[in-house]
Length: 219
Image 1 (tube, rainbow, N blue to C red):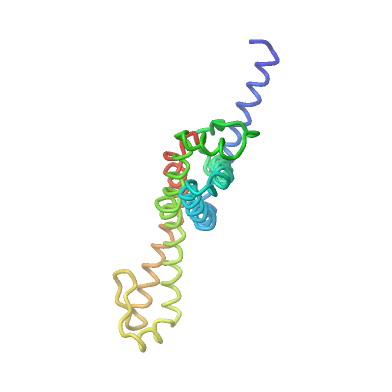
Image 2: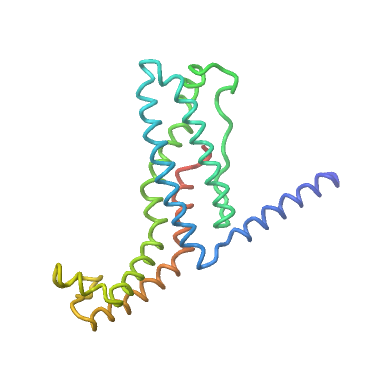
């Protein structure tokens, strides 16, 4: 290996190493990054999955021959964005993408038929389905626990009273809230729930990327 190649390899390795180190999330930022990923699955993965399935179903009537390549291109772009976020936010490297099975300059029907014969195209749909179900649940867990913890303080601040008058005893986790004392106990339990949500933020953030990365493969 010549000197120039060795220097290029060293720069690439150093950049990748710094990206991984920089991508390790803090405890306070991790739950909100995970929440952003959950929102991304709802506003991007769900619509793309539905549109892609409809497009494939419309192939026999001809419309899908022209819409399917476009939608699969959008899905690949979303997958690339998720790979970038995995490095920046969690220090994880997901499998790299593969080249398209058909030339970009080929006509739409030819590209569609080539994409349907490619297993990566179907893996992309499987990735979207996993992303908007298991991936979304894992990413939502820390923020959900934090919100539940804050709700305990809200009850202790006096909100338990109108709830109790309207609906009787209100259960907060395993605490039956019916007076100020039990409302204070709910706040105590909420403190533990809030701390737990913060502590598992990093685990859930990396868990999200590992879950979706397992199905993302090299699509």
